[in-house]
Length: 296
Image 1 (cartoon, rainbow, N blue to C red):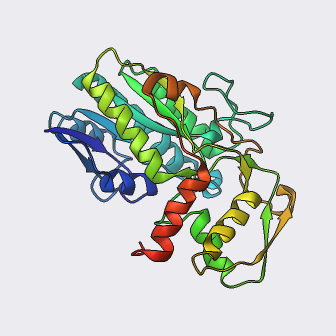
Image 2: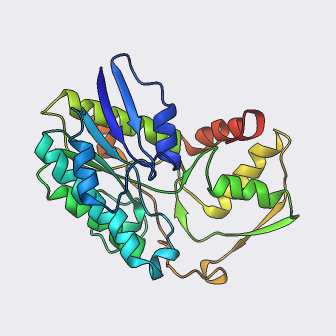
């Protein structure tokens, strides 16, 4: 049995990694922050050296984007120093690491989908700290895949889909930002992609390495996403409020958001054969779980 060590067990992606149906001969151990202190590099080193893991998937992150602006040390500890410790330990153990990163490493200031080698210019602490994690992994000497993603949603935890359904049941009209562009990402689809990459790296020392992007296919805005949530949700008995478009300037936040979070996934398809499905189809699966299945 080949065992992959994964982090982020309390988050959306880590939860989906634990729920994933892994191929015969593979298993995953998904840790929460209660299991491993991500601010303790020595604990991370000890955990990686605890047994002969096949690979590490670091899906844990400090994701409170606005809070990070005033909580810089915590954000950098989890998003940069923890990946550095994992990557160094993986290098020492001779195993690969898959590091999850974010669209927030980009400024979001141009049209078109971001390529993996486009210049990075984070707008705030969260993006800068995640970029720090990327650099730590990239320069560690460990075989690695850095996977940037954006707009992650699922049937569990806190995310845009669940927020819209909750607020939409309370109000007849909602105002949603319409000038931020991106592609929603199913945490389940992302977890499956991470697993595919990790298993390939573990099995093949000549497997491609580097930086990749994953999001579900097709562009939209937060406003367009909200409209689709309510359109699909209504057919399942959910709320159907009116959704009014507003500019980002009408909804100020401590941290600036990228205006363009579209990610080009072509290199992921080329190197690993992973072809993300349309985000609308992924949303349908999420709504099925939220509205017709057990809630989490």
